[in-house]
Length: 147
Image (cartoon, rainbow, N blue to C red; front, side, top):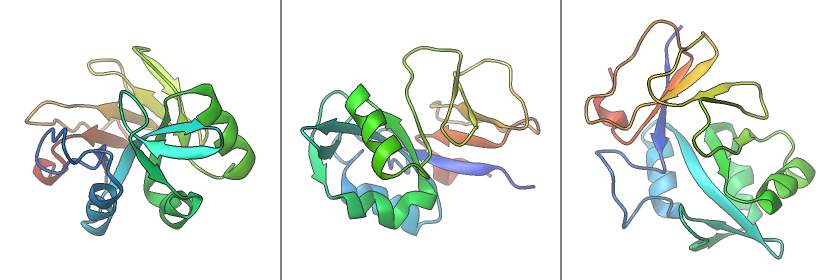
């Protein structure tokens, strides 16, 4: 089984604060064959991408059309409730500094350096992301470097 490579916020070659979490960057990463972890906010039934605050408004079809490739990090409770109600088949989660977080589809989102299982997605934001046999996937700012 091959390991799933997930682009952190759509980044391909390292952190890129200007382009990460923009709809165009997310779609580019998907086009290059990667899944993508996105940061989602919902306010007044409007959806936004953005890490620290809602930045880029998106329509529901942006999520619906790419749902199989998205790992949705809910940034507020309204985002979780929205997805649970309108896109229950989506893969979403919430965390801060937890060692482990279970996604809505049962994957174990794993903080860097913590124990893993065959169902774990590790977060490795270093410039040289490391794979191990005991993992489902890796979320990285450097998906182009994962081999």
